[in-house]
Amino acid sequence: MSKVLSMREAVSRFVPDGATVVIEGFTHLICFAAAHEIIRQKKKDLTVCRLTPDLIYDQLIAAGVVKKLVFSWAGNPGVGSLHSFRRALEGKGPEKPFEIEEYSHFGMVARFQAGASGLPFAVLRNYAGTDLPKANPRIKTIVCPYTGETLSTVPALNPDVTIIHAQRADAEGNAQVWGLLGVQKEAAFASQSVIVVVEELVDEKTIRSDPNRTLIPSLIVSAVVVEPFGAHPSYAQGYYDRDNDFYIAWDEIAKDAGSLKKYLDEFVYGVEDRAGYMKRNPGLAERLAITDQVCAGVNYGF
Image (tube, rainbow, N blue to C red; front, side):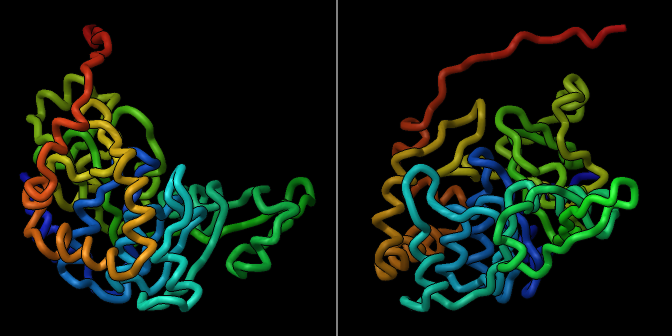
């Protein structure tokens, strides 16, 4: 059965006000198109979770949809601070204040793993000698029943919805990813609902021809959205390159709340969908065009 929906319909149906939302992808395959639709629909009081809330969550904060941020690192990768994030936390701008709940990278991974496994918490050594447990009372300790060692624990994370960008999927939601991976699989399996956004919709035969590349199976997918260039300014391996110029430009855009608002007005509120976004960025597809490097095939015969 086809699960293909428009982005507007998928966000409307699976991202209610007050939801806990995850948009994952580690520098690669970050679904900015979904975040923009969340902003356009003026969702409220969201708890947003992500290992590395970079530009995508800076935009969500600027739009006022965030009530709480659960994360492990925040910044503009390779450039500097997230200015809307910082102004809101310091109370020095028009941005709506929000709560924060901070972990290490592995702490966030462990939370997703516990959630995906149906466990109430995860155990790790990650916080020995750090001050994070003082800043976050949800990080606790437990005595190992086998060795007597004191270990740290983090609670399971089970989002209401996880949004994953992938290169391709079939209409049922079997999604294939290659290139740099993050914690997409764990976040998806931990979630109540999963929206898969893809560059390309392919038939079941294509998916079955290379089954090991299927990261997210259809049985956990709620909706499939076909949105070419939906990960820009991040990248989709094999489809388009990372827009490093945009990440540099964002530093100046976001330094001033007024220029950030102007950006949102033009490129988010001012368009209906990703196709409209691309029209506002003439020459973008050509500038980020890739050089094909096709891997050798494998023989699945028996």
